[in-house]
Amino acid sequence: MKLDRIMWGIVLLFIGGVLLLENFHIIDFYWRNVWRFWPIFLIIAGVNILFNRSKSQIGGMVSIAILVVTLGVLFYKGQQAPEGRSWSNSHIEEDIDFDNTNSEHLSFSHPFTDTGSVKTILNISGGGTSFDLKGPTDSLITADVQKRGGTFSLQTEKTDSITTVNFKMKGKSKWNMSDGGNDVDMRLNINPIWEMHMNMGAGEVNFDLSQYKVRSFNFDGGAAALDIKFGDLLPITDVAVKTGVADVKIKIPTNSGCRIKTKTGLSSKDFTGFTKLEDGTYETPNYKSSTKKIFINLDGGLSSFEVNRY
Image (cartoon, rainbow, N blue to C red; front, side, top):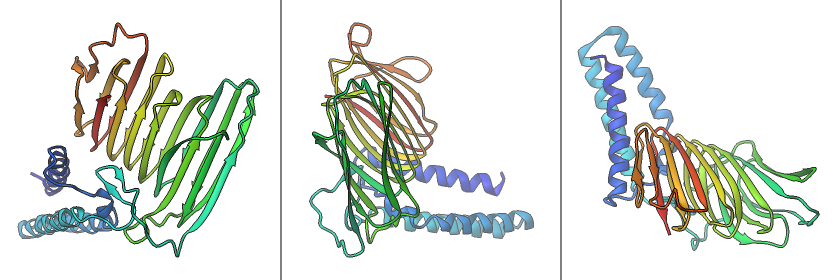
């Protein structure tokens, strides 16, 4: 068997084992701790290429040994609770104070004018950022930012009956254990029908949308912690989540019928209260009879997906 296949197999076993131990609550693993060490995998890949060319059995054993030791170090580092605001099984620590010496506070807002606008599209982009929805506001949107890297902007435009809001973070974000990355506390108006699109690399999202009229929610991210709660104020809600390595938790109301379609590779899935059908499809018992429905599409490589009813 080729050396590269063995090494990739070890990496996949490591990630799958960690996700499994997390699901059974045997360990608390903080993925944010290990992202800082990603250049190690470039070194391992370089060593693998060198020894593959020489076809040395001893060299192959050295490569595997280096990989195993590296994964052991990452496993140890991943179980150490990070300082400041952190990933703790996707829960954001709200009551921790951290040093804001190197941070800057920014505030953004856009007024709400009820002029017949039917739909509001919210586009959010930016990596290395923690987003938290703090509840309703009389404005259309407000955002309080604790910035430690990059630049933020809020732009709005209106065409016919649609208002589009673009909240963006550009530039390099300092996402590490010492400063905790950027923090964004948002508030949204409960009157519009919302269509939400989030595009981010690494980060955290904690949105309680149970009191909002959400027609669709789309998330595209890499290494992310996503915790979303939906309500039943509209007949249909479409949810699409596409991730790389992430911890995704979604809550839906029990009186809404729900169908889940998955394309999740090696990801773990926990859909309590759902009936499994064929081709990666799951449904709640009241899916056909319910007048309100939530459609969820999940696409992830090595992620943990959990959908619960409340």
